[in-house]
Length: 385
Ligand code: COA
Image (cartoon, rainbow, N blue to C red):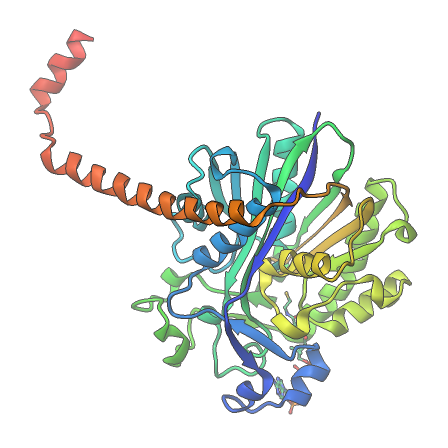
């Protein structure tokens, strides 16, 4: 039995910033209303060239760099997302290709804003049972492509981005100590995003953002989601820390899904702990769904909020309804990486793209010049065998 440690982390945010004041020019709202109800000041919006997969790749490449792990050593890639470009191929397969992770299994996971914690739990179990030696878990979203930009009740909440962690097996006790995954499908209608093929729109592209589509966009009952979130944050944290044999006072930091500061205030009161024990960055990124916890984790590390041997809780909640929590012992110090090596590491992804193109060409050439055998020839071959 191995322990699954977080040994790398990375995040990526698109450059374009959409402030509350920008939104006030698009719908009937104001900075004051949005900030006082949600704690959000601004969010990032993906450019036309960026996709969920490219954001996921950037976050994963940063996490791998910190973990000092070569992409060819990666054994499993899980992408938690509600905004894949395709149902298949999965976003995880695209990331596998971009990274050049030639020995990795890859799949997407759909659990809305709880998806990252679900993925972390799946990956840590695969490591603990020695099915794989390491894994990348990514949360990545382009929520801006699935919002109704005329609906002030939802479009003010969400943003785009990606975050990733690298998990690695070790015989040193620690890492992911316990997880709890829960769901309640009876509340599915409270927060939903219809699949494209239910209500076809011609092309999901950048124009989708601007052309006033009202179908295939996020729908939400804000009040009920608020009530649900405040309840499950407290219960799932209590349940998971009990599984890990810890008490709430032994938890150094809680990194919650970044949906709303008022939800966290209420959850902190229920747990009878100071709100400062929760790390928040929703003001700068908005709700990035599955990406929010790993992005917040990166900011918490950057701000010096995590020290070796800290007990950290991740807690997610969202559409499904789903909710989930994990307790992590933060006890692996990443190696320092010198700059020239970093530069070299970036070059490997250019090589990976080249290799991917070559493979595509090879397939085309084989397809062009191969002659499919006649049924008689196939029978003769089978007889010979
Ligand atoms: N700007 C200005 N007014 C707005 C508005 C906006 N962006 N959105 C809604 N309003 C209005 C409503 O139309 C309503 O007006 P009315 O009283 O004239 O009918 C009024 O504000 C109150 O609406 P309500 O929906 O009750 O507001 P609220 O206090 O519940 O706040 C949310 C709305 C969405 C901020 C809040 O319900 C919430 O945060 N819910 C959780 C959402 C969430 O986190 N979802 C993701 C979970 S993963």
